[in-house]
Length: 227
Image (cartoon, rainbow, N blue to C red; front, side):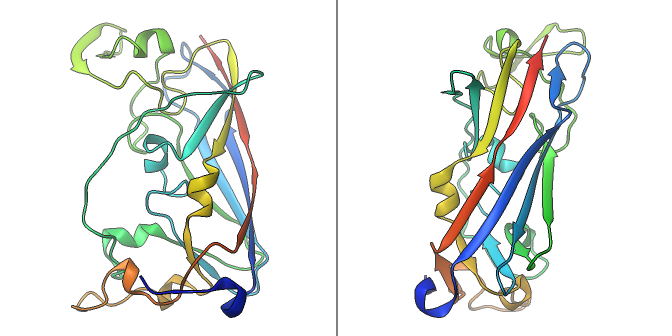
């Protein structure tokens, strides 16, 4: 992959991220759907910044199942071991209109950008009712009446699904994954190529990527979980 050095080609970038969960309290009894996880991003960098979010905390909803969204119980700050799905796939493309275009997130100077997803299972579709830890750890799906179905599920939490009631949790971003994200001081239109391109169609073919040089300021969110 061709890259540049941030110290010589672009001023350091600073990106603020605020995490919110709405509503801030989730009840497994009264809330049939998970709350909404929202990341609000802001930069004052003099140029647009494009981030390649693939397999990183800013790729929602997949960040909920690759452990780049973190959950800690409070007040102990014990880290919760969340669900992990590993997918083998071909390299990320940079073709305009391709499904991989979703992994190129452009932030404009002084302009808030928000991304969100249901904070639970379902890949962003928001149709699976979350269940508490005592049910999830049995490893079986349940129907709307709470009866077990002979369909396997992960015993580890995804968002609020699988968390223990009666506790408050802090939601954050995996720092190592965040700091390893590739970025470029341009809008994504300067990175993407047309669909007919046969060469240079992959993310790594772009020569202006920078790794490092971003100061990340993350304000974590909180959610209370009840029966």
